[in-house]
Image 1 (cartoon, rainbow, N blue to C red):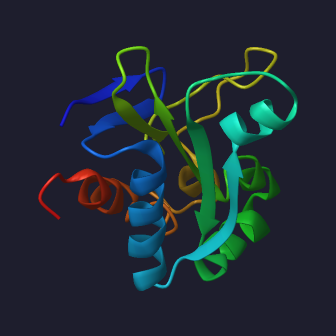
Image 2: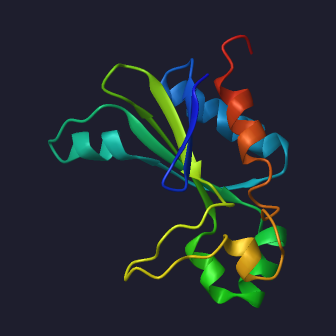
Length: 146
């Protein structure tokens, strides 16, 4: 498993195809009581438009009990929530999983810093509860032996 951080993005390599990785991640999140809001199949949409691209899908998920208080305190937290995980096949045929690192500052359009994430803007002082399980769930979803 290859883990890296680039521009506020965490990324790991999966040992499974895109669809399987996303299915495993979705299943693990549901087991933990996390709500799945949407699954977007970018490559499928491209195909329906007559275009081709390697497999790429996004899962949008979260926990309203954790996210709502953040957005009540700082409405702009809604720009970061719900959480999104992007899964795609890279040029080498490997499956990659990426999500925003909630602890890293990322610039907003216009060059203004985003701060230290939604939880910090809302006064939470750390990683939001909605994101806390993402690294564990994503690593569990990409394990080759499970």
